[in-house]
Picture 1 (cartoon, rainbow, N blue to C red):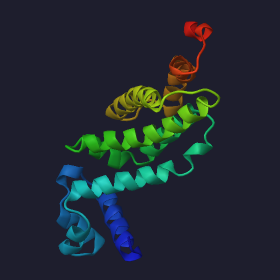
Picture 2 (picture 1 turned 90 degrees about the vertical axis):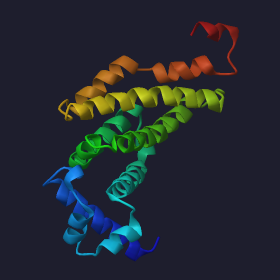
Picture 3 (picture 1 turned 135 degrees about the vertical axis):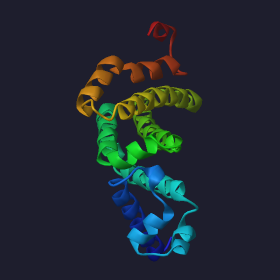
Length: 196
């Protein structure tokens, strides 16, 4: 993608985010965005088919930015807390998407972030023994759906609970479980491991 196209998309994103501070997503028109951005409607349609396409692009871009450097976290709780903070930083957009017909976009955004994050931790935790890829994905999916469910409920309640407190509580509940699950699925375990 060329620099002009990227710059135009970023300008449309900035206009949408600015307008969201004034009114809900379902009340914003393409005309509102193009007027605020100083471009014509054809420019908008050159890049996006509708406002939800723009929202989808914003979330994909934000997910890509959020994933940069994710491996630097020591454990999944620190990475999950970072994701919650990023959601909070984009609260106006997230709440508008959550309350609109495009709630599924928000779920997909969270699934993408958590799948990538959990895959990294599963791969690190399974070093030294063998677990089939399908079993790893099963474990990733289980935790991903649980954590996305918790995040969506937190968003539904207007992000009132402190993300640090929420992550600490999840850590108490799930501490060590991911590693234990991997050990239970290992293909190279001995009969003594069956009691794990």
